[in-house]
Image (tube, rainbow, N blue to C red; front, side, top):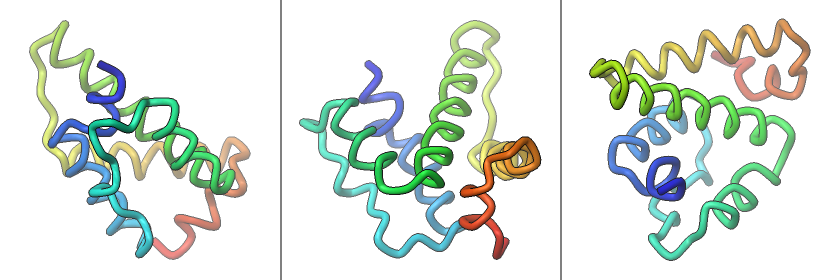
Length: 109
């Protein structure tokens, strides 16, 4: 279930594509995330590149998890753009809280 939720779900992939466009990550390709890629392999492949990517991966995964819970437990559904706006706002807060490497990734926003 975790692999589907965070990396294989069509909704989630569309969110990652929006993040890719926002951050201008040309080598970031969600089509490489095949069904046989375990959640551990996916996380390692994505988050272990830089501290900034580890932070972004954690932030987006946390946002996806909260959206999943809102849908399952509260029957509330957010649009992709709303989730992207939440991620942008949270990223700025994380930088203020000390995630300095993250500031290099979203500096050009």
